[in-house]
Image (tube, rainbow, N blue to C red; front, side, top):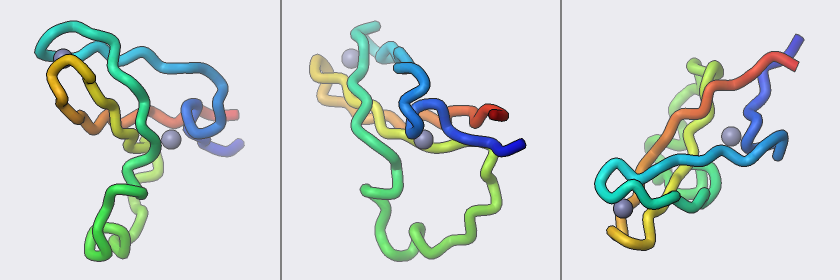
Length: 72
Ligand SMILES: [Zn+2]
Ligand SMILES: [Zn+2]
């Protein structure tokens, strides 16, 4: 069995509410795309979750959410 991220694999859409205003946050992709070289080169030891960026248009707030990978 393999652990995969349900969001990356488009198994379902995850709904994250903004901790400030409760608005539904938009999924902005994987954290990787926002990482600088230093963090990107760090070993991927924690493969049990996948960090995604969520954005609230109301508060102009970005949040990193770690999505639990699921066994397929
Ligand atoms: Zn993912
Ligand atoms: Zn908000």
